[in-house]
Amino acid sequence: MRIYACPGNEAQARTLAAVLGAMHGELDWHRFPDGETRVRIGTPPRDEAALFCTLADPDPLLLPLLLTAAALREQGAARVGLVAPYLAYMRQDRSFHPGEAVSARHFGALLGAHFDWLVTVDPHLHRIARLADVFPRPHQVLHAAPLLTAWIRGHVPRPFLVGPDAESAQWVSAVAAELDAPWTHLVKRRLGDREVQVTLKDAAASRDLKPVLVDDIISSGHTLAEAARALRAGGYGAPACVAVHGIFAPGCREVLREAGIAELAVTDSVPQPESAIPLAALLASGIQGLRRKVSS
Image (tube, rainbow, N blue to C red; front, side, top):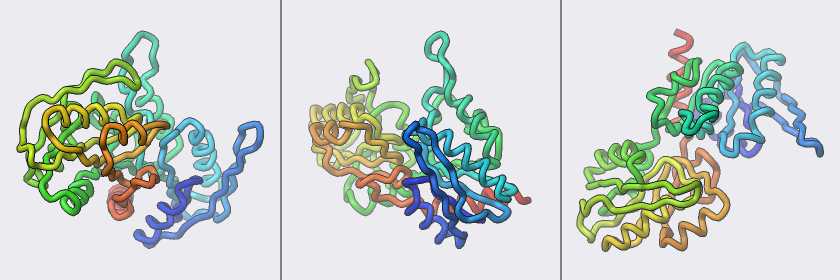
């Protein structure tokens, strides 16, 4: 198997290839002035190719991604897989207002039409029970909770884990169980894309413990910022924050800093300065397990 990196993913793809003992393939995307992209496969694939592409900011990536999958098949790949540590378009999992497209279902079907398998980490699934409900091909959903646990264990001696909303409870509870630490989640009311109200549900732990906000995605930062303010209002100190995916939309870091969140750690599912938790070993194990399953 050769692993090909979409632009911006080269370092992660090379690390993954080294962990897997796989070969690295050369891939080039050239963006023309009119916005079109030329795709060129520099290294012909063997029987199987894996395309490494984290799907943050997915719209400019999608068409070149699909063209690359087609080009790999034209160059001889019998199977083409997608390694997408961050999988976009899972949030819109139902039609909230008349006429809205259910993006998760359509995006999953589109990827399934072009890729033979998919490996991803903690997709943003809430009203969808399983990724199989939107992606019809073989896949492996990996969970970063053990890696978040290891980071907290090494950096926060006496943690009190806090989810910024009810949706985060699945990650917070898993991490708290491993650490044998108290945890709670806050109550969130969303008022808009960048406006939320967050309240402290209960006083579940001693004020002497260090609060650690745990979430799956940091995007605009407003939910985490309001959570930090709610903790401070409840008598807790400045929290640390650990999350799976660090999107960091424009202005996010300033929002978090103004709320008193200075200690941040995310995985490298989206390469960021705060990416302190590498995923290469987790991804490698997922790919190996999926390939065994597919070949059996």
